[in-house]
Length: 422
Image 1 (cartoon, rainbow, N blue to C red):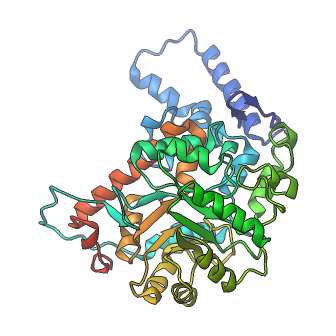
Image 2 (cartoon, rainbow, N blue to C red):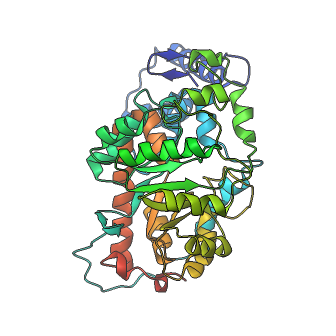
Image 3 (cartoon, helix red, strand yellow):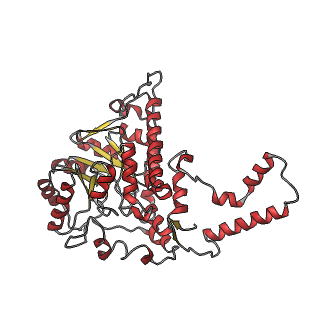
């Protein structure tokens, strides 16, 4: 790690075993190699390539240097790791406990195999979907994630510009670095607003009225953080960042004082949210309060999905907070079938968690999801390259998804059914 973030410098040290130590050692070995062999010129391209392949420096510093070099969204992870300060990258990459659910989000896709149909005319493929009367060109949307200025100076505004350029749905976090008004201006339309419910009802009313005044179409109530969480990986990796928090934060992140600085929490009586006492009673009160569509995010069981329908939810997001809520050892894609079965078509079901390929998106739609959210991939793109990185992530996933539709013989979203899964 060299600790660069838009002019900021982070000294992670060069102790033995550290990334910088390994990089310096590799660079020294390469210099010595060149000095020892400077009298013996490389007479062919093959010799030069052989030198590069054997170079420890090349192994340490490989990776993409601009978004157009990326072949898959995973290419952006290492690019972001090189650019984003390690404490901030730790926040992005952590799961909870042993990160088993984080891993399960990816491994779950292996449990569903595709059954492609051949000799279908797929010269014209329509990947568009409809949600609450709005048609989107793709089922892939941008999940809410807070504190995006930790990854790039333009934060949620860069993400909004990318979503605008690609006509993608964006959800904005309560703990956004920028206000809903500023993001709506950058996006060219109001985002969907993700709500961490303030502990005081009068604060909730105030926040909701502000969001409605910004003309947001949907309020996405997140319900999977009320019991707390143990982000162990974040705590461990953050120790490697020797910078004082005050170099980035006026107040420690996640504290009451730190929350007061959040644009969407400023002016509230209390900066606290996600009370452990929250119940379906709050959902009822919220449903009666708002004119927006109410989406409940963070459900993983059929029982809760049925309750959500009965309490008036307009949509559900199957989610385990990117493996950052409870160590359930179940991926979101594994939870999706029972939620869809319980909903019985009454409301749209969305899903997020672990999506890295277009085939992942196809599998989710075949299981009954209406739309699929991405989180870490676009954050990697943002951290590495800003708006251009987010745009490239969306381009790659949309291209892969369209390819999966063609290869499976599905010409429209309506044709993607469970019959395509083994």
